[in-house]
Image (cartoon, rainbow, N blue to C red; front, side, top):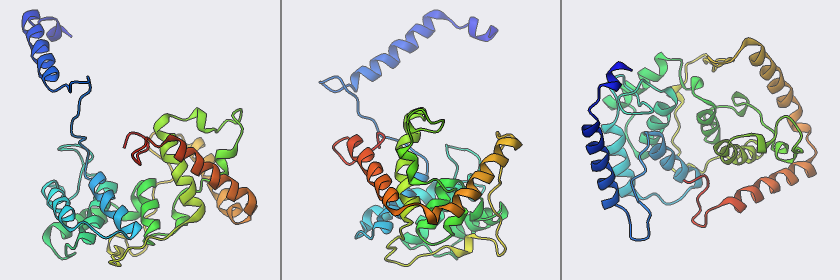
Length: 266
């Protein structure tokens, strides 16, 4: 705090003026700005996996460029972080490894071996986050039972119910609703190159922790029992109600598309 108080005001104002001028020079005539949307390794990795999930004809030149980007950004710890010079992130690393293998990198290549060893040393792909495990389930790499069960009927709950989309953040809503459909339909990726990553799993498995670091034991136990119950009840949901829920999810997404096939500003 003392250091902040000794900043020269003239120097501060000059820095603000330079930053303002730099921004104004890049402003478009109609008042908006366009900048590159920078992200970690998960976004390009997920793009590769999405194209192969859909079975689309791959853009080989784009795949080549993404491969260069991923290899260049592999960190000294063998994996990929969520931000520049960040710590190892097992979910980002599993996605990057999977994407590189889809592109055509040999599992025996030094950079692939380093990533694989780093993943296995931290418990294997079973230790990834929920979103990554769902993506792995789509490709048949792990069982759907290894992901939390969230019934699509959640979207039909009344607003007064303790768990309702309106009580969730904007970003959570745009993510959860599509996941409700995936959980209900459990589709399988086309995966035209038939690429799989069994080598990222430990022989006897290493399931994800039942409790997040910030979560109390009581809440962890509650959600564990709830997930157990939902998994056992899931096959018995009335088919008509399930179809209605899926249609409601579809309407939710379509209504919020931005006209360019985007949802949630992406």
